[in-house]
Amino acid sequence: MSFSFSAFMRPTPQRVEIGINVTKLQIFLFGALFGSTLVMLMGLNYGRIPMLVKLAPELSEPVNRSVKILCWITTMPSNHGTKAIHIKATWAPRCDRYLFMSSVDLPELPAVAAVNREGRSYLWEKTVFALNYVWTHFGEEFDFFYKADDDTYALIDNLRMLLASHDPHTPVLLGHAHKSVIEQGYPSGGAGYVMSRAALRLIVQGMKNTSMCYDQRFSLAEDLKLG
Image (cartoon, rainbow, N blue to C red; front, side, top):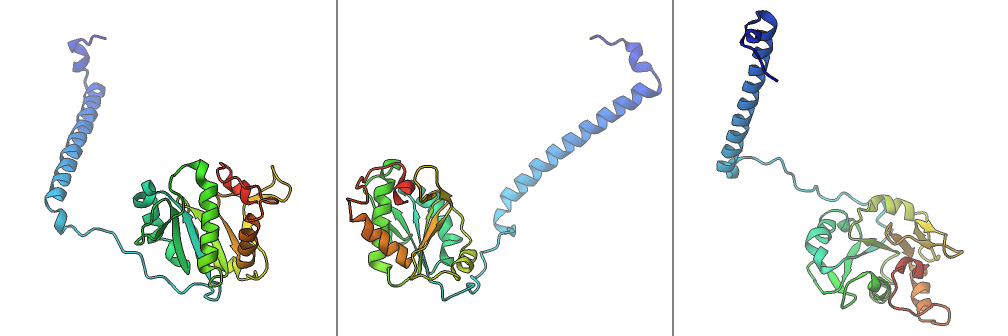
């Protein structure tokens, strides 16, 4: 498209349009200059700029201290520094005790080597180890045992309120139930599940009976096998 000189000589409309365009350009250039200058000043004065970041508040008193919950979280070494540490810094301390099930021991996390290799094919092996481990070491110390993955955020205080109405001496398994494969259903592993002390004891004992519990260590559907 070509423009004649006379088009720019029209009195009011064209001059106004040009004025608006120039104003927008000026605003854009000013914004770009101001923004880059601000970023430069922030870089030069980074150490003296107060950052609007607050430490997490101290944990409030749990809803019901009489309900003792152990939380165990499945993870892997590649997620220790990206997922597990954030669980440790947020909701895990709400549990009465927590530990991570990984493939290496890391006391400062704390993580336990449940398997010697990672992958979905070894989730059932990791789960079997975890259930036996928490029962052997903590079975008589806690009332309920909560399993979660390392991409989970759990509201433990809400869980305490839910569990306050359940008896740890009664077999209880709570979670999001799938009933599409087996009649009695099974708890979704991704959503997490919690079992009472009595339920954990029965499951650990039952896994030793290979005539009733199919002994296949390597399985993709670890939550289905638990059900």
